[in-house]
Length: 113
Length: 113
Image 1 (cartoon, chains in turn green, purple):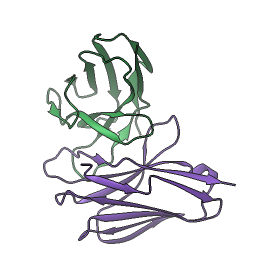
Image 2 (cartoon, rainbow over the protein chains, first blue to last red):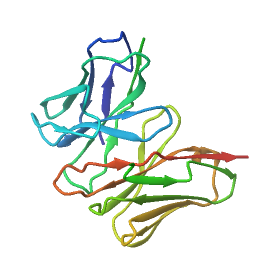
Image 3 (cartoon, one colour):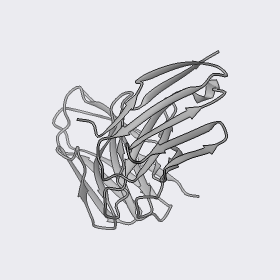
């Protein structure tokens, strides 16, 4: 077994601020993902990475940057937070391949004032 | 337009009853379907996956897949209050090794006593 940890658990920022969310996994998984989930809705892919130093854009990458400095960690930066933005950002990881299960972290809840 | 469509949006089921959820992909490149369950305030957890035509049963949960129509359904028999959750359908298999998932908007299931 393994675990995915996300920090911080809650993030409150100001409009226009740059905010960074962090994710660590000890599954030794190759691929990591960042999703955004608005309240009660489905997940939208922001960025993913199939190996260290690789970055691939998802459908919702505008306004975000990502960084995968090592296999176990994946960071997401909100480049300029938007007022009234409220969402949960979920990190996930999986082995490489379309048949491999994705495991999710507990999420970071973002509120922009 | 959402590539993975789920119906209904919400469902109220009496305890002990049957819940039936539907999901269709409009992307003909997908090969694999997943059902995730997300309890309120928690992260999604993989419930069942199905990759071949036909049916798969695990306890009270049964999934069906029709690859020709890219339609999958999830059936929960003898529903329990603990089954109350957001059920997310996802599809993968668009090529490459990313394991990238496209999620639907989910079906909110409420089991009432």
